[in-house]
Structures are given as C-alpha cells and as structure tokens.
Length: 117
Length: 114
Image 1 (cartoon, rainbow over the protein chains, first blue to last red):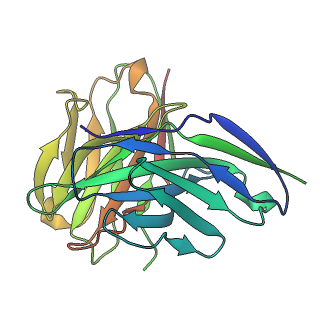
Image 2: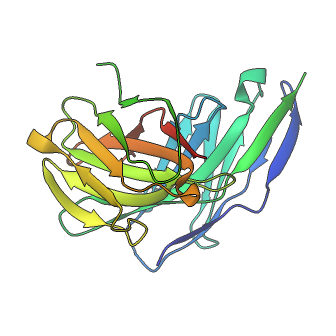
Image 3: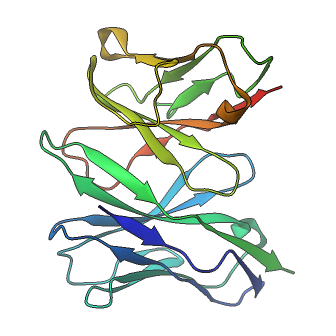
C-alpha cells in the first residue's frame, strides 16, 4: 500500500519569501511518481510539478521545485518568491502504475498555505 | 481544448433523492477517473475508466453509486438514495495512455445532502 504524509496542516509565509512544504511517502514499489497539486478555494486541482522515482535531478517548474530525497522518502515542495495568489491548499500525491498501465493516485491530507502581504 | 469540464458545480439535494453528475474529459484522453474529497482530506479514488470500460471500482463506491462512460467520451456518476455522508466534492480527472505526469482535474461538483 502507498501512503503520503503531510505533517503541516497550515503554513504562513511572507510575500516574496520562499517556503517549503513537507511531504514524506511510503511505498514498496520501485517505480512510482510524485506530484504536487494546488487547490484554490474554487476547488480545482491544479498540477504543479512531477518527479519520477528514477529521475536523477530534482524537478523544477518556474517558481516551484521539488526537493526529492529518495533514501529518506521525502518529496518537499519549495515555492520561491511567494505571491498572494499562492494562498491555497497544497497536496502531495503519489501514483502507482497498475497492470494495463493506468495510474491510481494517493493523496496526502494537504497543507494550507497563506501568504501574508 | 477547454480542459476537463464538470457539471453542475454545486448540487444541494434532500436525503433520499438521486443525483447525477457529468464529466467531460479532454477529448483525446482515453482514461477517466472519479475521486471524492471530503472536508479536510485529500481526494480518494473512486473508479477508473479506460475508454468505455470501467476497470476498477473502489470499496468506497457502495451499491448506491454507479458510474458510466458510454462511447468512451463523457462520464456520469449517479448516487441513489443520497445520505448526508455523501456530502463531498466529486472530482473528475482524465489522462492519456502513456501520460505519467499526472491527471488533469476538473473543477469538481460540490454535493451537499440536507
């Protein structure tokens, strides 16, 4: 079974500062993928960044970077230069490939980030 | 391509009534997923379609729940005899074969059972 743990229910960050959202995972699969999604109050889940278990380099997408430490089974999200629009729930998630190639994604419980002006 | 579309955005219903939600995935995506998200939790997997075939159903999907994807295009999720515990956000997502960078989610349907 897969499990995602997000230990920070809520975080505050000053505008323009960087913030790290923690995520640890547990899986026995050698091949997996890790994601971060953003969910604003409107409800839509917005894909932010992806890291494959075999990727050698940490993923980056604009102001988002994923600090992937495979041995520690952690996949922290770093948001640089926070903006007011970054205020939202952030979910760490993992997928496993099943026979037939489809994905089933397991989500953490989320971290609510509030950016302070 | 307008992304994944879900209707309605909000639904308030009385306990015991039936409700149906619709999801229109991205047109070239052959995989479609339904998730349920309750307050304070992350989304939980409900069911998966590849084209028109429903290949997996979670134990969360009781007999009161049924999902279809006729012709492998849009999908519907029906809840019969709704209960207050069914109140949640129902999220639809789609992806294409070989895509392993994650789903594209819709904006969800928020169901409130009173």
